[in-house]
Length: 152
Image (cartoon, rainbow, N blue to C red; front, side):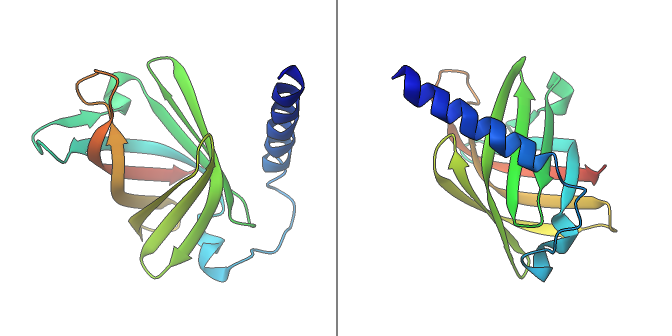
């Protein structure tokens, strides 16, 4: 068991080092992906309950931060820090029309699709389904996420 944990840690470290090499002149795998490549920080991030649309959580107002790095290959690393706990997600982004699909492969496998819109070259708005523990009982409920991201 200790060996398996070491292998996972080494794999994550290697991915982090590769993600940090974003300034290398690497061709973008998919031309539709080109506008997404780079580092993005959330300027707005709200989650609305599907069961009760009057319940809206404004994560930055509660001290949360969110950032995402998109590589030319389509690989992404997203980090949400909420309530002093960092949650890291690794996966691959695919773009088709006005839909962006995040195929997460760490920490678990999951596929989420969102609509997106660019407001100029450095502002990205995404809306899509998510889950969030609105009542803090340990069980996530269906929600709608709204992200506004600024390119660094």
